[in-house]
Length: 258
Image 1 (cartoon, rainbow, N blue to C red):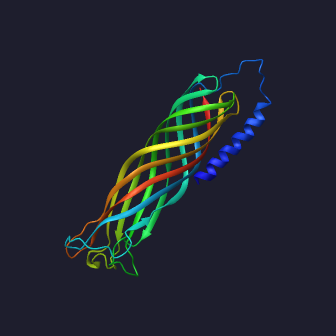
Image 2 (cartoon, rainbow, N blue to C red):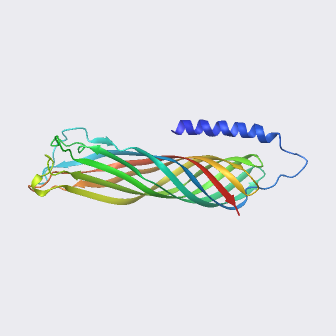
Image 3 (cartoon, helix red, strand yellow):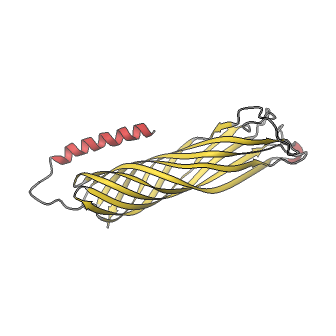
């Protein structure tokens, strides 16, 4: 996804530079079409990468057990993503912009892995499973842009990002991992996790105050610890682990300068 995004941005930038270069009148000072406040919205796709690793596997009495299967699982998903953003640019050189931007986005990323990674006690027909859901995301980024022409620039951004992540584990009543006498057993935890975000994008002017945007962003949240199911005598085996969590987003957006 990252490779295709960079190729697309580079192609569009090359075409736009060739088109707009013929429109420049070097005898007149260029209008500053970028400095000041702006706001806009974007729509695209967010790919979530969730690499689960089970760290502990316990008997119902709480005794540590050796893994019976691979303790790893991929909880990856793609979903429609949208965001709104607001920011400010300042022109510090004829062809250099610096700025800051705040954005708020959301998507319904969701993926399920059948069976408990690492457990040797799960058997058909009703497997236990783990599930990862991802929703709101907020970021604050510093930006630096380079103007190819007065109405086209490429930019990079780096900053702070936080996201809402929900991890759950469910054990159906008819399974080996938990006692059917207690019915379906589940555990869910929602956490707000934070990390860093980097982006690269292209912006071009439609009219004096309106512009379009193409952007690719990568966010990395590091490892997030989660308890799966708690071991309980005569009721359920237990497990816990962590999630190596990141996301990749590609967006098309429109903005207005005010």
